[in-house]
Image (cartoon, rainbow, N blue to C red; front, side):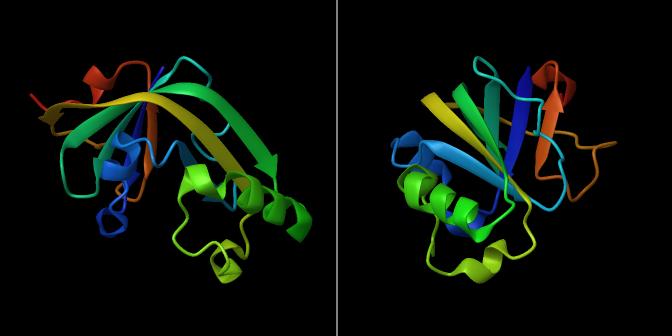
Length: 141
């Protein structure tokens, strides 16, 4: 399975993925949405900054999913995995208010690829994660 992760360009995370400083992509949600239960070890994640072409790819080493039912679980996730996630302000917890689910995608073998643009038609303009059988389905020709 292939996944497209759309990143906030102001956070400058793609260079951190490539340098292996960021080894975990985290997604925090109010509802169980993609990639919840749709991503496994061996899958491929393509990365792009919003408004830019796809430029980075990595393999999924493992995935952890959490139901955040208490502040203790949230604290555990942040305290245990922040180094790999590279949260900008892990001590600023107001960003996590209302989030009930967390997905941690452990990355391996990141690399730069030939840039390509995508067509998100049918996936919603606000989607920051898209799961497809093959990335070619999204590639603009």
